[in-house]
Length: 97
Image 1: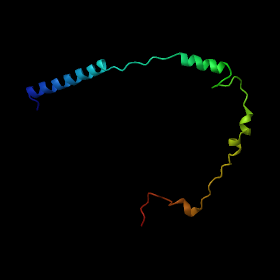
Image 2 (image 1 turned 120 degrees about the vertical axis):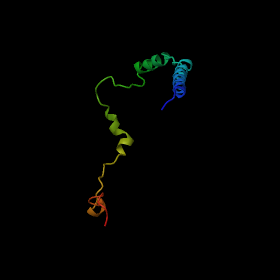
Image 3 (image 1 turned 180 degrees about the horizontal axis):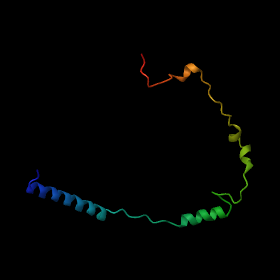
Image 4 (image 1 turned 90 degrees about the horizontal axis):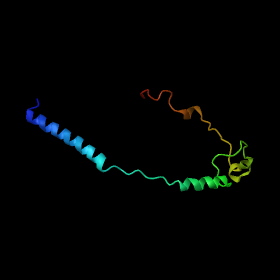
């Protein structure tokens, strides 16, 4: 059972924690970084002048991808074949006798 003295101590601790939390959020508030728009303007001007494009201007697929050596070095997927013995136990949760 709480005595009056313990009750006051607990209320004091709770009030102190709330005030300390508010003080931390108010006093140590992180500053919001500013956005430098000149970076975006230079990227847009590069894309408009024929530089790096994120989205193509037309809906045609560039077939030169198929002529790249990296594409030609790709191999067809070969599925792994397993025998019945290699598949494991029928019921893995059944205790072994």
